[in-house]
Amino acid sequence: MKIEILWFSDCPNYQRAADLLREVLRAETIAAAVEMVQVVDDADARAQKFLGSPTIRLNGVDPFALPAQTQYALQCRVYRTPDGLRGMPTREMLKDAVRRANDAKNRRGAEGAEKNLPC
Image 1 (cartoon, rainbow, N blue to C red):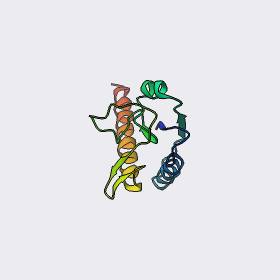
Image 2 (image 1 turned 90 degrees about the vertical axis):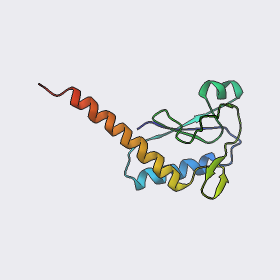
Image 3 (image 1 turned 180 degrees about the horizontal axis):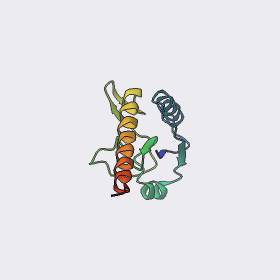
């Protein structure tokens, strides 16, 4: 699984989000590296489709993005959690997102293997 955390240097939450994500990966026994991608300015934010720091992408998808979110800029990100607005997703939100992304990756892999079976 490809995992990225996009962040900028003044963000107070990106390191805690990275640590929590790594804890979730260990608990789910998913061996995957977390690539830290620094976003340096607004032009880079637009190019990366960066909704704010921290942005987490699993297999190239931001599982927490809302369809109406299109303001890409060097900014802090706010997540809607069961406990209200927070600067990062909860452990449960991350666990659910990681499981969905891992399941989707495994399904794609199984479908590809089925296509290569001998007749």
